[in-house]
Amino acid sequence: MTRNAQLFKGSKVTFATILFTALLMLADATSVFAGGFQLAVEAPDAGKTSLKDAALIVRTFGCFQPADANVTVTAEGMINGRRQSLPVELRGDDKGVYSIRQQWPAEGKWVLVLTGAMHGMTSTVFVELGEKGKVYADTRLVAGQLEGTHARGLRRKPTAGDVEAALKANIGSIALSEAATPVVPASAIAAGGGSFLFLLGLAALKRRRSHRGSAA
Image (cartoon, rainbow, N blue to C red; front, side, top):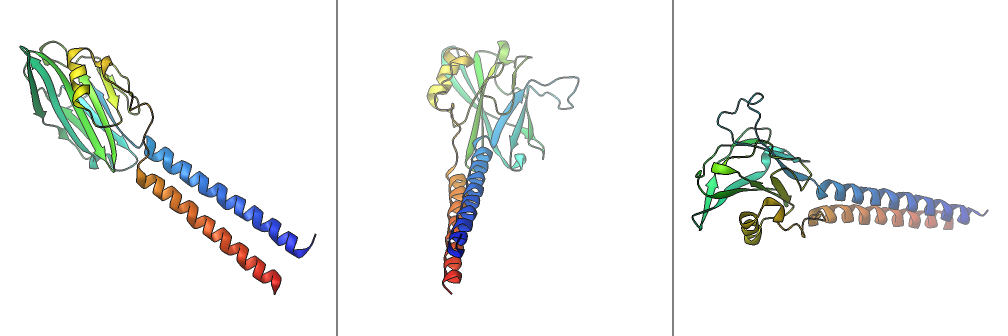
């Protein structure tokens, strides 16, 4: 085998290795951002929590500092045929754990709408409430899941239609057509693509230097 053939074969192996590494980096970035932020909810266990008057526990999960998430809650209800929308106050700690006490009337039908946002990712949870606006004792939605007990999640901001569907029927009627496939933020794609192009450029530069050395 000639020296030029050996150099060409070596450059092909190097290029393939770099290409494979870049693709792995892109895949890793995609997997991280696809499910990188979620909200989870659960009814408090009176025997295991020190949070007084808590009706619901909310937890944030993600690849970043969970406490940095911006979480908002509203109580959406119907009282005697009239729509009501009330802001709900959260009490949180530095670990991304929040508690909610009942701040809405006992009359009527209510759902809680929780929305969290962090680094371009959004997680929404609808929580169905029972009689007198109480959280069901078995309410639970695990992080990363869209279906829970008396709770349902979305990977986007809720629409007015989502809220109305939850009020007019049960929590299972909330549309999930847009939430079936995780959305990768543009920043993740740009980061992976940038890494790929950079490594591709290095491979091309190395091939040029190899050809110059063989010509000399």
